[in-house]
Figure 1: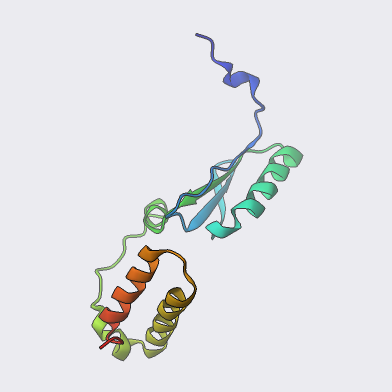
Figure 2 (figure 1 turned 120 degrees about the vertical axis):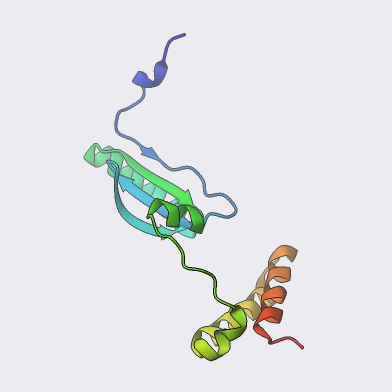
Length: 129
């Protein structure tokens, strides 16, 4: 069986669609990391990658990744989890923002799973009685 990969252009952009859990886009040019972007910007980065590959004859990859995949790629080992109950005392500003984010999800999000997770987190944060 013949291998037809040699018929494809050498310089191109590879930009698979992000999956449901992908949060980040890792952008590589000729194998070197150049930026990390939010997955919601995929269409914009795909267009830019295709233009760049064509105009500058280089390999561009826009790779969607989950948070865990990105940490692994960057060789970052997360620290041990901290009890969420202490968050209000340890970081009140972050606590308040977390509560606001959960309430926004409850008001504006369309999926039942996201609303259930927001309610569960609000309960862990101690905001629900």
